[in-house]
Structure formats: structure tokens, C-alpha cells
Length: 76
Image (cartoon, rainbow, N blue to C red; front, side, top):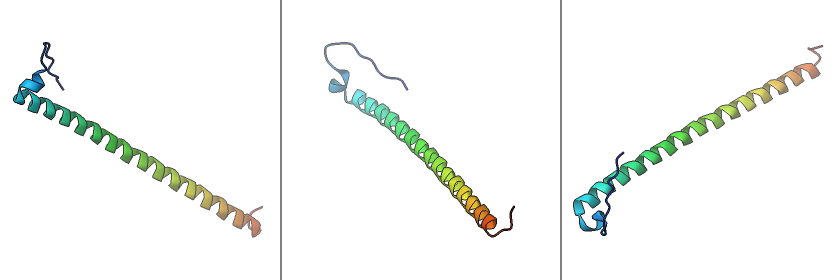
């Protein structure tokens, strides 16, 4: 992404409509890119949390199953 740098007394964006439109497009693209990155991170975190919950549930069920089998006298 390139930015237009102008030095002078007046801001080019205030005096030139084409420059204003161009800068607004650049800003919009930049914001869209950042929003897309955040959405991807959100999806990744949701996957991690879901997998951690599945692992916790599986471990808990395995432990309960082992305890029931042990209490029923089938395991030493």
C-alpha cells in the first residue's frame, strides 16, 4: 500500500477531490484488510476452543468409563 505524502501549507485532500477519493479508497482497502485478518483470527480461535472442548469431553468420558468398569469389579 502506498501513501501520498504532500508537504505544503494546504492539505491536498482538502483542495483536490480526486486526491480525496483516492486516499479514501486506500483507507477503505486498508480497513477491509484489517477486518479480514481479524475475522480469520476469530475463526482460528473458535477452532482451537472447539477442539479443546472435544478433548476435554473425550477425556472426561474415558475417565468415567474407566471408573465405572473399575467399580463394577472387571478391572483389578
